[in-house]
Amino acid sequence: MTAGQSQSQTRKIARKPPGRVLWFERLFYVSAALSVMRFAINWPDHMSVVLFLAVYALLVLQLFLIWLTARRRKNWARWVLLAFFIISATASLIYDGMTGGTKWEMQSTATVVIRFVQLLLEDVGLILIFTGRSTRRWFMPAGPQPTGWPR
Image (cartoon, rainbow, N blue to C red; front, side, top):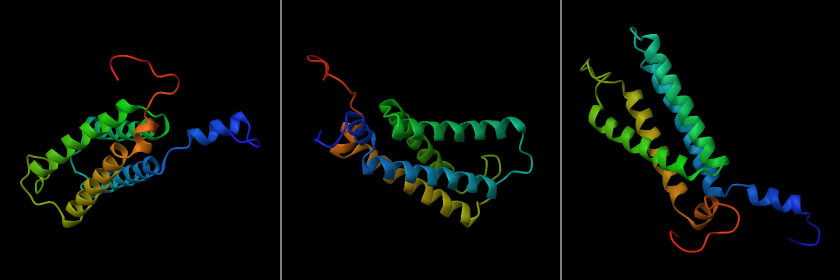
């Protein structure tokens, strides 16, 4: 702390997320927006209310996890996002080219491109959030570190 800074100013500086975390947040929010766009393009005619609410709930959960990771420094939330990404990417590889799983129709080119860009954005975001010294420090708990096992 320099002579001209108060203790509250120092706390505000320390709470600002590192650049990697900010880029992760931006990339994942753009990916979520693309997800909404992709869903709107492939809107099924026979969608039930339950399916719509499930998709909406998953989107809200994703947005909440992004916020927890980037703004509240929750380490477990970034691991949950990684798990969701692995499941989502695997499902995309298995089911790409099909709509739903019951219809064997080809998806539109726009849908495939949007999904590819979405996976690319999430991949880059996860690389940013799991690498770098500043990111590791961002997720370390504040206060005195316990000595001894586990480290």
